[in-house]
Image (cartoon, rainbow, N blue to C red; front, side):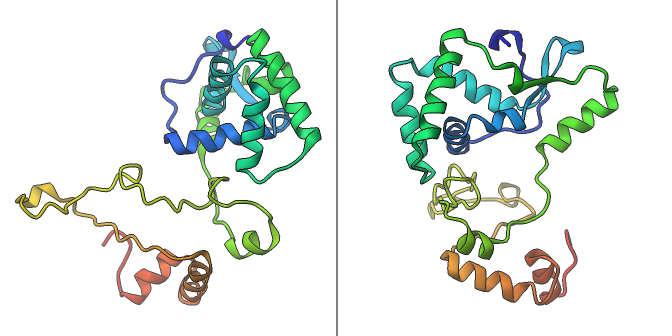
Length: 225
């Protein structure tokens, strides 16, 4: 399917930071076959508007606009290195499929699917479900049973980039601030090593079903109190 025939959803409720977009790009370049299993879903009844996969579509367009058949090998190699992957077969497959995509500016038919036939309510539900991440990660299992770089896969953000984290800087002591300059809710940010994080999490889970629930109980507070 031609890339130009698909249209991004202006009402898509999800967005990616530049850093998160790069992580997604690396995963697509390294594992293109997974796009067969996690298809871009579009609505032919609404001008081929994408219901699921807007960010993947953006990344695939970026690949076509940025790389050539001569440079795609280096791009895939860099992506594999970022994810701690060293697989010659995957490299060959990725280079082949993305070279074809770049030259034709089209997606393989098994990367896309039409939501035609769903009701409007079902289509709206699909958009939300596709963007929801239910559950929490068990970082002890990930750390001990998975040979992956957690930050590069987007599972843990160790960034200290305050601009990226959208934190307000109140460090200028020469400025005066009124009550209206501050939000009613405050954010307390704690930084741990992965080992310390697991220890803190396990201790908190002795007091509640989630770390947040445990903190509220320990402080005798109610959520949103």
